[in-house]
Length: 232
Image 1 (tube, rainbow, N blue to C red):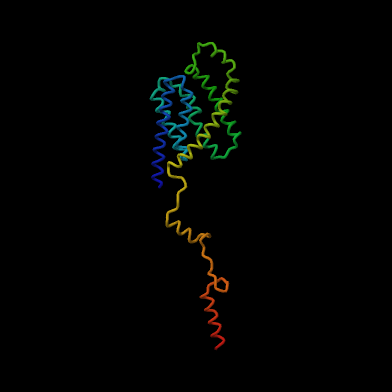
Image 2 (image 1 turned 90 degrees about the vertical axis):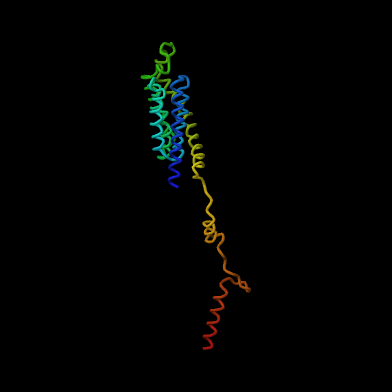
C-alpha cells in the first residue's frame, strides 16, 4: 500500500512539474501572459500538496524553476523573478498556514507584506522586463509606486489568496479519491465480525414460556440440584 501511494505521489509530482514548466515557458516567451502564467503554474504546484506531501511540492518547484530557465528563462532571467519570490511558494505557504492553524487575518497580513515586498523588488530590479521604460505612464507611476503596491497589490492578493485556498481544497478532495484514499467498505469477513460483536446484532437472552428471561438449561439444572439436596 505504501509503495502504491509513493508511486502515485511520484507520478503526480511529475505531472505538476511538467505543467508548471509549460506555463513558465509560455510566460517567458509571451510577455502579456506572464502574470497569468505565474498563477496557472502556481495552481499546478498544488497537486503534490493535495496528496499531502510538502517536500514533493518543494522539489517540484525547484525542478520547474530550473527547467523554466532552460526552456526560455535563460534569455530573460528576470522574467521569472516574481514567480521565484512569491507565486511559486505561495501554495506551500497556504499549506503551512493550515498545518500551523494560523488565524486567517494574521496569515493574510504576513502574506500581504511578503507579496508587496516582492512586487517592490520586482519593480526595482526587473520592471524593464515587464514594461517599456520609455512610455510616459511608466515614469509617472514611479512616483506613486508605494501607494499602488500597498493598495492594489494587497487588494489583488486578497481575492487571489481566497481563490487559491478554495482551489486547494477542491484538488485535495479529487486527488484523495484518485489515490484510493477515500472511504472504503469493510471486507466481507470484517463486516461479519463487526455484525456479530456489534450492539445491533447482540443476541438477547431467550424468553421462557412463563415470560422470564434467562438460560433455561441453567435454571433447570439449578432446580434439579436443589431437589437432590432436599432428598439427601
